[in-house]
Image (cartoon, rainbow, N blue to C red; front, side, top):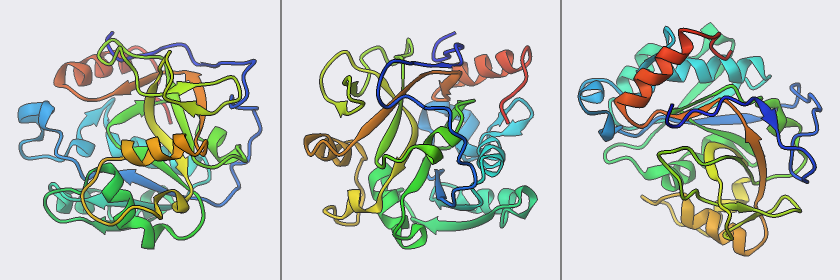
Length: 251
């Protein structure tokens, strides 16, 4: 199925691969990106934010909250723009998942990924934080990032059919590069707030910020072959729900 990778194994023999250490007790904040409109979803998001779409009987954003809490992450920031009040109503303060949720209000239009992160930095604080796109679905072990001593780390996956050209390369030392062969950014990362220090607030994408880090050799990558999907179209959402009907959903 387009966009789904079913091999749940790490790629060994390469620096930057997860070493298997469980450091889930490490205190780290997380940010869930949930401000986007999801225009390619058509009628499905005409009256509903994308992060509240149902997958396997639970909304996308609830899957992320469950998995963050299970990984030991309990302080979470969610950015809001399109129909953000519906997300607030559905999620509340997070106590159902034993987490604390704070909201970063962006207004309209949303600030895109880079601008949204910069806007939320006062809530995220000075320490490295975990970033998760609400519109991806994966059973990637988040403790791999909590345990990794490196900061500014992207999770990269083999390119799905709908994104064959990829985003970033990964060298033998585990550094992210702009050199082919390219892999796809999975929408999961750890960032140090200093990564954004040279960029002014306002609407902007994430990629130019990451490209600057690549030029400084300040961005690492973890490659995984995992169950991963970008929920970018109604067809991929339907395919994921069919898949989850035949296997246990990640928690």
